[in-house]
Amino acid sequence: MGDIIGFVTNLQNLLSMGVGVLVFATLVTLLGSLGGEAKLEGRMKAVAERREELKRRSRQAIAAQGSGPHGLRHSDTGFKKRVVERLNLTKLLEDPKVADKMAQAGYRGPKPLTTFYFFRFSMPFVMLALAVLYVFVLNDFGLTVMVRLTICMFAAVIGFYGPNIFLANRIAKRRASIMQAFPDALDLLLICVEAGMSIEAAIQKVSQEIGGSSIDLAEEMTLLSAELSYLPDRRLAYEGLAKRTNHPGVKSVATAMTQAETYGTPLGSALRTMAKENREMRLSAAEKKAAALPAKLTVPMILFFLPVLFIVILTPAIISIQDTMAKGG
Image (cartoon, rainbow, N blue to C red):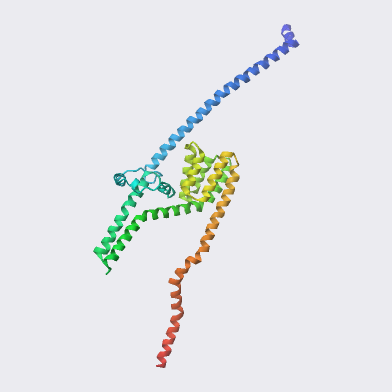
């Protein structure tokens, strides 16, 4: 017992024990740092495997959704495809911007493109046949042959440009629906980002909430969230959103978000500024429509309101004059 007490109380032995403890702690620290790198690699590998699994599940879900009648991407099968391929309408009616226009109208995949080419080729003949049947067979309306031929050619021209007019009208309606709810979507996105959510989760959340105001915008936000997860460069996802909408407000937001991703600028301030600008843009568009309303009402007023007004004002006077002349006679 005395030897143990003497060993413990010896200063040299205490120094040796302290040095040994320090050496042991140093070795544990060094070994821990080396093991931490392997642990980090293992965790990153697990995260990558989990992400690949989520991608695979998302692709399966999108494929299952796209196979239905209301999917985002439609398969290209059927009679119209065979007609387009046999007549080579893709090259005959080639339009380099038609794919972008179809995406702006909300039609994705090869099937809508084939359908567009089919109707653009067939509608002139259909309209021409209907016009010939109407003005030459059913009723000639007492018109000369030249006038009836002109009507038939005019119907063929309408059939040729009809699909383009329909597509342009669809693009305009869809863009108006998106821009009507886009400032509100930016406000919701700003709230989600400032609450600590990642940009992918925030966009996915906003796409679920904004569907009641604009289904088209909810669809675009969902596609943006998917592209942010799949594309190798996030800039391509924002550029895709700007190209599909083709609106200056969305393009400015896409540019601001790209710069925030590239240079590390605060995303919240950029979203707040963009939301304000888009809200002002929506207000200016409404003011522009209101300012153009008097000019648009001029022709309906001349055709419909003024004749009724003249009838209401002049009819009592005409009746009074007729009564006076009857009494005088």
